[in-house]
Image (tube, rainbow, N blue to C red; front, side):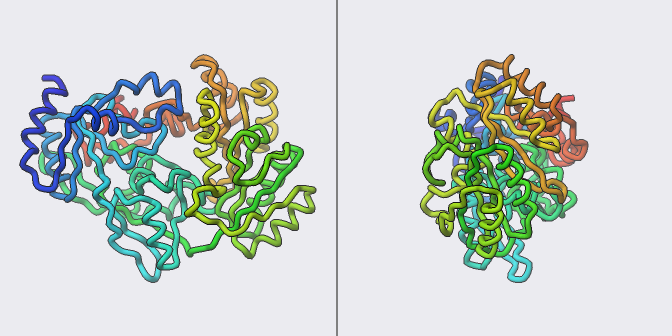
Length: 447
């Protein structure tokens, strides 16, 4: 029996479930079977024709359990979806079946008044969560550039770092994710509360090894961030300064460096283009004088842009992380990108790659903390010249010592460190023993 036919039988089986909206309209199927995988021409070719057979939207835990039970019983693939803001095809159903929308699960269950820890349901938008935290004097530690529309479980399941990583590292660093509530996919699905250790295998697993219904996260004290742009004529000076600033005794939330060719083409929210490479920084107000002194000593142009106004949507964070790629693709859709952690010293690798690839490779750097140490990550813009070109560039980056996080692959492992995470596979055996959830995305399960 085909997956399509199974899904139609599933529709009849679930039609009486209270709190469950079901749709098989072509419009809904096409809309909810896609994310922003078109950032990658390689993924576009692989995923553009992948469609679900059925879309379901539960509004209760009982409805989620009913869907999980029915999909397991009928051997129908089940793919979870938040807001669909990812770029890697995480929520694209490779084998049809059911896509389950988690957007109705958006309650903030608790904000601890002492620790600031927050327990929130999986479909809550990061924007709404951060706004509510602000009323308690708290804020999220790490945000994707899509924070206005992304859901919290979508970020934890598909993301790794972002705005705030200069201080708080990556989502999988100890102390960021503190616990999960999940539903298993079994003959009799279970609701489980996982502690921090048991939660880690579900972090950045593309929803392949458990249905996340709620998360407990650490937060940080609320800070009114100040926007600063610092311009350098010389690229070497800019990279050296970025390293210095990220290690200085000041509170940073963002420290991005964009090559002048990028600054020339993206919106002028950080100031007019003046032929310089530009650092974009969010800093606490008590760090402004130190930042200005360091910039002046380095011969740079210091521009204080004022307090950040998140509501306008024209701030510095809208030009960084994956939004840098978004802004460049608005100019020319032939731009795509790579993700990597640069070897130290960073300039040697960048100079070698720039010498060969020239204007087909434009540098975008982000200061991050990795296992407690300050490092420079790169999300360079890459001109699309075909898959052979991209494969050669990735090969050259690895030869230069970079660790690649490939955004042009569909599996968890190939998009990460390239190795199978045994803990992720073991979690899938426990919580999704028949491999119903998002099949084809966890390489360790395929083998």
